[in-house]
Length: 155
Image (cartoon, rainbow, N blue to C red; front, side, top):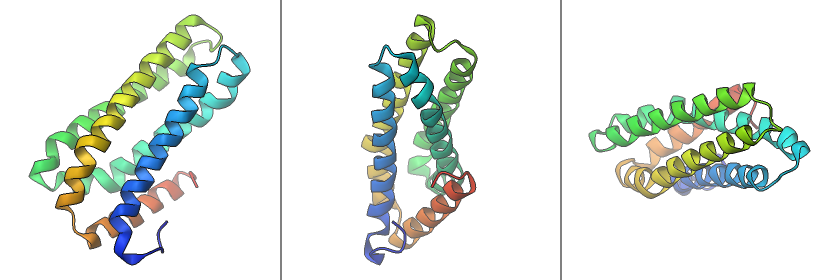
């Protein structure tokens, strides 16, 4: 997306983050809706990787810039806490047998936590950030976000 229309860097950044949320949501719904172990075995590692890489890129490139604005600080702190919560879910899921009901239940709890986090970002954080950040700053954040994901081999 970088390198596209120069006037739409901010829109592209928020669209990209929203698109990444949608991809993760789709994968999580496939797992949550399946009783098939092979589906969980196949998709869970992709979900785990996507959630972690996305969170790290936000933490490195997006949140620090947002936290510089007093109006966004509380939302950024909440988002960081939610990322930590998802990481705790992932650690617990990693050691459980994916064939069990306990794993499926725990996965469902994580899905709910991710959904709440995404809703808060997309409905509260993104609109406020869109108003407070200028296009040049959004472009820089987007470029830094690209680099952060590239470092983790996401793209």
